[in-house]
Every structure is written in structure tokens, then in C-alpha cells.
Image (cartoon, rainbow, N blue to C red; front, side, top):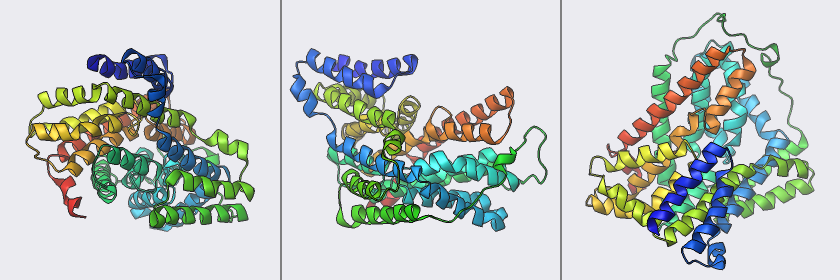
Length: 426
């Protein structure tokens, strides 16, 4: 039954990819079928439903759907970037840092992933920079702080680590993500020759007139209230240790009562596909674990691992899996529980945090792929701001895909340098 349970995960991902259906919904159905086939009652299968994870994802995403709906975060982003116009020579660095800062303020990561690319690529192009370079730096900047413990993804990753029996590594996970994507951003800057600025518009690109000017109105009352609630929410989670999702819901209700956003629009703004992807695969993995599938996976990986190949293998495996599923839903909950067995197979040569960070960082290297949200938004922004031909669009697609692949290899190699162990004493 162990083999069948493990194969069910492969089948679910394959069905989702080829049929273009939500993998999470398919996973929920598979969890019931697999449980019945393995002798697990329906009630026991339901008990394994990740309720806390669901509340965490829904609460956080609902709050930020309100913030997106009333334009508070988008306006904050525009104000920050317009003020950077006088520092054109430092613009790539500013993009990276402000994107990281915005992701701390917006721990859901939606602003940096969805809103910022079009803004920063437009401004950067007018300064003479390669817009794709600016787009990649935006996503990598966001990824440096995406694992903040008060954010959707960081909080979820820490829940997965805790449930696997490891101690809290919230600070270390955040810092190791910062290390990887800072290194990645430097390499991208070098690869795209970011120091070279074109002072004339290239003939193959034409910036839309509508995108050449960014209007900056003043914050209205509801936007000021939203930003204030955001600060209070972050403080409550950080200082009081409150449940992130439920805390976000409390402040979301306050905003709805204050008519800071339309309730229906807020519900429509929640990325339900992402939520069900996370809880669906998480639920299926719970059943697979009960049937011994994850233990089998650990044994398979340990059989082909050595001291030098274990960490890169985990990182690259996590990256490959994240090309077909959300990192926080697929590779992270699948591979984290195997760490103890795998580390023991090579004589416990690694610190737990080294392998944990390898898996988490590897999972998010695919974020800039055009098959993932980050890369898709950069590609979409490029198409919105410019008028690329079909060949140029394909060229940009290939560049983003190549960056994601190279980054996944780099993440795997870094795991053997001991760099993720630097934060172990914190």
C-alpha cells in the first residue's frame, strides 16, 4: 500500500497538469479514495483535514484582498517608486530592497508578485534599464522576505516544520531565504549586465502611452485605516503570538464594518485555487503518511544519496516539484518529513536547518518561471506595457524559464557550502 499511496501523489499532479484542473480539488477526492482503499475510515480521513492551515490561508488572503480592493498597498508602492526617480543609477538595488520591504508589509506577497512588476518595469524602462531584469529583481526581492513568520507562506512553512517534529526555525528560515535570493539577484544583475543603461528607446519596444505616467493621488481615509490595521495585525502576530489567519480575520471584519472595501469583491479577490491547492495536497499527504508513503519516499531518496549529493538532490527535487505545484503545497510538505531519515542515512552530516532551508529555498526558485505566478506576472506586465511580437514574447518566456532552472541548480549547490548553517546559532 506504501507504493500505491506514493504513486497517488504522482497521479494527482499528472492529472492536474494534463487536464488543467486544480490539483488541490483532485487531491481531496484522492484522499478519500486512498483512505478507503487503505482501510482508513472516512471520519479518520476528515480528521486529517488541515483546518489550521485553511484558516491561516483564508484569513490572511481575505485581509489582503481587502487591501488590494481599496488600493492601499498599490498606492503605497507607487509613492515609494516614484520617489526613487532621482536615484536612477541605483534603481535596480532600490527595486530589490523596496520589493522586499513591501513583502514585509504585505506578508501575503500579492503586492510584490501581482502589482509591482508593471509599475517598476515601466519606471525602469524609462530610466533605460532592461525591463525583464527589473521584473526578475522584483520577484527575487519579494522572495527574500516571503518567509516572514507573520506572512502566509512563512507561517505555513513553519507550521509544516513544527508538525514534522522540528524545533522552531522561523528566524533561520527567513534569513536563509534572504541569503539565497540576494545571491541570485546579484547573479541576475551580472547576467543581464544591469549596469548598462540604454538612453534611447529600442525600435522593437514601444512603451504604451497609458503606462508612461503614474498618477499619485493622496491616501484616502479607508486606505489610511487599512494600512493602520495592517500594522496592528503584524504587531499582534509578532508580539502576542496570535494565530495569523484568525488575527487577520478580526482586522478584516473591522475594515468591512468601516466600509473600507466591498465584501463581495473581497471574497472574489481571495485566491481560492491557491487555498484549495495547499489544503488539498496537504490533506492527501496526511493520508499518504498514514499509509507509509512518505517513509517509502525517504528510503528511496536515501538509497541514491551520499554526503555530497543529499542536499543538492533535495533542493533540485523541491525545485522540480514546484514547477508543477505550489512550493508550499507540494515539495515543502512532502520532503520536510523525510529529512530525519535522509540525514541519518549519511551519518547526520547536516544540521536540520540546512536541509529544511534547502527544501524551502529550492521550492521557491521556480517562482520566476513563466509557469509560476512570479514569472507569469512579469511576462504579463511586459505584454501590457510593450508591444512584443510573438517571437519576442517566446524569447522572454525562454529567458525567464532559464533563470528559474539556473537558480534551482545554484540553490542545490549552495546547500553543500554550509551557508545555511551560519544562522543555526540564532
